[in-house]
Length: 87
Image (cartoon, rainbow, N blue to C red; front, top):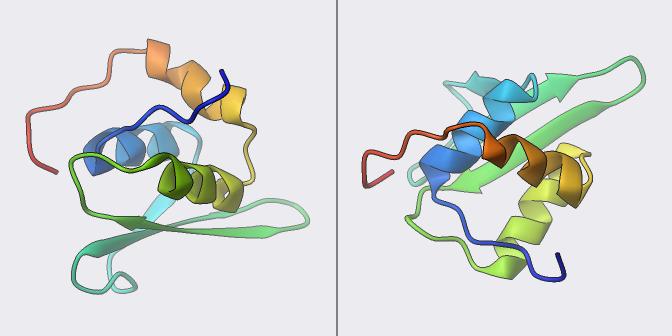
């Protein structure tokens, strides 16, 4: 998988929640949502813009911020992801 497949904000949210991230209700501003996860030695902070499709560069930054490898992140995509349109 050379490219970073585009996902909607809703799909990214569902994947992050399945990976153990929590949505921070008071931290995101305007058109962004913030997800956090604390591990034994590190704190992960992922800022996700609300869009229908994210360009590969944005997807790469989201995955890098999550501390996951690309194949780990997209592997959960095989689980049915509900997308009811919009974000």
